[in-house]
Length: 318
Ligand code: ASP
Image (cartoon, rainbow, N blue to C red; front, side, top):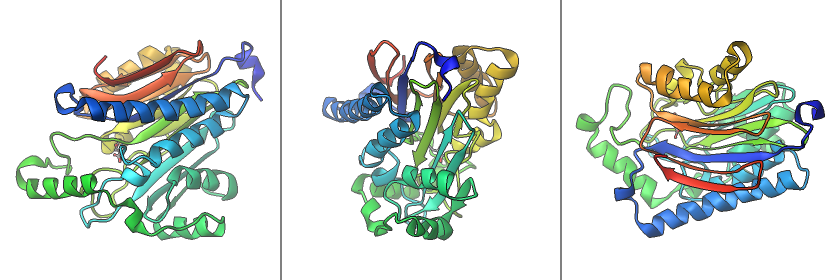
C-alpha cells in the first residue's frame, strides 16, 4: 500500500488501441462507432474496478482482456499475421509499487496473452518467457491452450496478402509499410492505494518474420510503471521504441530531470523517437492521476476516465 503518495485516493485510467495512419477519410461512421463502443466498454470496465477499490493490476488486466477479445485491435483475437501466415502474440505487465514485471513473446495458442504475462510475473522466477516454453508454462498454470485458428480474421489475412503483393515497392528496409497502422492495445491505471500499473498486448507487425519480437513485451520499451513517477504503455514501430527505451525514458526524465508527465511524453515522442525515424504514441499516467496521450502519427485509438470521472474517447489528431 502506498497511501502517502495518494492521500486524496485519486484514481484514473487510460487506454490505447494502437497508433498509425488513422485518417477520418478512411473511416466509415459505422466503423468509428464500433471502435468507440469497444474503447468505452474497456475503459469503463477498468474504471469500475478502480472505483470499487480494486487494484490497478486488476483494472489493467480486465481492460486489456476486453480489447484482446475484440477483432478490431491488433492483440488477441485481432492479431496480425506473420509472413508465414501464423499469429505470434506478445504482452507485458508491470507494477509500479514493487517494480515486478511479467511478459511473454511469440505465443500462438494463448487467447489472452496479458493474463499469461501476469502469471509469469506472479508465478515464475522470470520476467520474459517466449514461444513454446511460454505455452508449456501456461499449461502448467492451468491456462487453456487454444487452437491457433482462433486468431484467423479475414481482415488481417487480407492485410497480409496486400502487403505481400506490394512488398517490393511499399516496404522499407525494416519491413514496415508506408501506411502502417499499429493497433496494439495498452492500459495504464492508478488505483486508490496510489499504485500504478501498465500493460501492453499485441500481435506485433504484419508480415513480421524470423520470430521478430517488438517492444510490447520489453519492459522499459513497451511497458513501464514506477510509483515514484508514472505508468506508460507504448504503441508504434517497435524497433524504435526498443532503441529509445521509450517507456522507461519518460519515467527517468520525471525522476532525474524533474519533468512533468506532459513534457516528458512530449519530448520522447516528438523529439527523441522522431530523431531516429520512429512513429507511434504512448499513454501515460502519473501518481497524481494526470493523464497524457502523445503520438506523432495521424491518429491513435484512445480513451480515458480521469480523476474527476470524465470519459474521453479520441481517434484522430487532437
Ligand atoms: N509496437 C508493436 C510492435 O512493434 C506494434 C504496435 O504498436 O502495434 O510489435
